[in-house]
Length: 424
Image 1 (cartoon, one colour):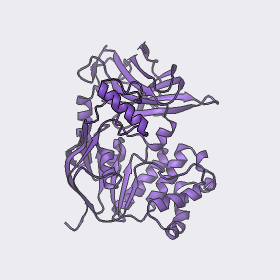
Image 2 (image 1 turned 90 degrees about the vertical axis):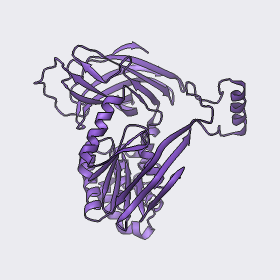
Image 3 (image 1 turned 45 degrees about the vertical axis):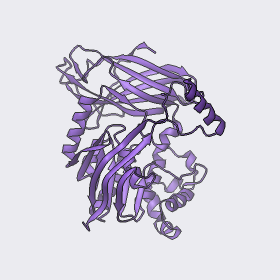
């Protein structure tokens, strides 16, 4: 149909598991001989899963859909469902293993916040460089420069090197450049997760206007269901690389949440997409979270909650803390558990911990968690070194006071008793 802007026709994407090469001929020969002799790969990361080189993973499995001009399409699904792979295929970062993808128009893609930004260059210089990477001419950038800076609220800092920017300032400028590209298709992957609430609303308004007023097509991936509700008029739910629903956002969110609640007593974070900005600060890589010895995610009155976390160290880690945030399904923070200075370890070490949480104060409801490792800087302020959305769970038939009033704050306004460490 002539009104169709994007078409996926029986598209699949297959990846080979494990490292493709060691980076040097010597390393590749060492790995090859280790496999032949049945020994452990000497070049593999300590504790990492070993693959035989022939194992395959279908990130997307025979998906087909169309997107019309001016449509705002949300894409949701659990970690590793194939959301980011879909956007990378459309952005031509990688090619499909099977099927065809067709589109009509120029694409503005934000898969990584600030891709192409150089920390040593000023904001002004990065606007021109990033705009060029996204396909804008120098004349186009100069014409829109004042609008880009004003939208990002960066007039005072535009001639400061971006290495001195906060994460919020960084994402504001990066989003503003992409949002002002004259493109027919806008692709956004979790780009609003860092900005403050006021700027998130501003970005959503900009994306909504792009779709409704300017007739541009928007594809938006997010774990924030409220932004999906506000922006999208249609939503796709992905599960294990396949489309399990395509329709109204509210129905899609309900299906996604129900699946999260019934399926996941364990989550694998190996394939969870971290942003480029998050990886720059990453010292710990969380690999798995689970409710040990549970078959459902329902916790009844008087039942304690045990959580097992597994991770490996990207760098040396000293005096790391852990924050477990509790949110409701409307993306409102409810409460938090915090452990300070509970772990230190060397680069490439692996570790796991089993925690016992007191959930007696949580009322009957459905919840989701965020797991965040953090350190303190020289001024005593916390900074995150790993953060991923985690397990969902249900509290049922509890004795919690129903009159308890949760007050909004960054992590739920209520700090619950610190988890009990059973083993580490």
